[in-house]
Length: 116
Length: 112
Image (cartoon, rainbow over all chains, first blue to last red; front, top):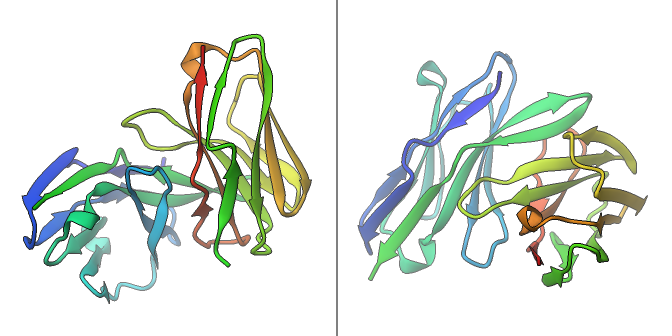
């Protein structure tokens, strides 16, 4: 069965601090895809990154970085020098194929609050 | 243009009403999705359309009726809803395969 666990329900930090959001996944597939989405208060889910199982290189995009470790089934997300605009709910998701169509299995989300 | 649009943004309806939610994308994506999201919960998949054909129905009650008239448009017809159906309804699209899904801003539905 496919499962994504985001153990941190809520995180609150002061602006400019670094913060890491944890994501642990379970899958029996040998090829799989992982995603991170951001959901600000407006409600729209914003795609941040996709990572496939055969590419274990870490990724950096500006203040965002992702650490993918197959050995521990983790795909963690770090925001460096956080800003108030980073406040949102962040979802980690795992792609599952059902009847030829892709389905995203989401974690429960981590609500991140950046205080000025 | 990486945009998925949804109308209306807000909808209040009574339990005897019939209404429809609309979703549109012009990115040439051939897969489209409806999700339901309750407060403080992750999105839950309702339906998947692939090449305008329904490929996944996650055991959604028949009071929700999806329709995909063409590759750019996805509708969700609502009839005889219950108050517990109040939620944020999100539409998404993706190229077929293993690509990311792009989400619209959602419709906040309140059933009275």
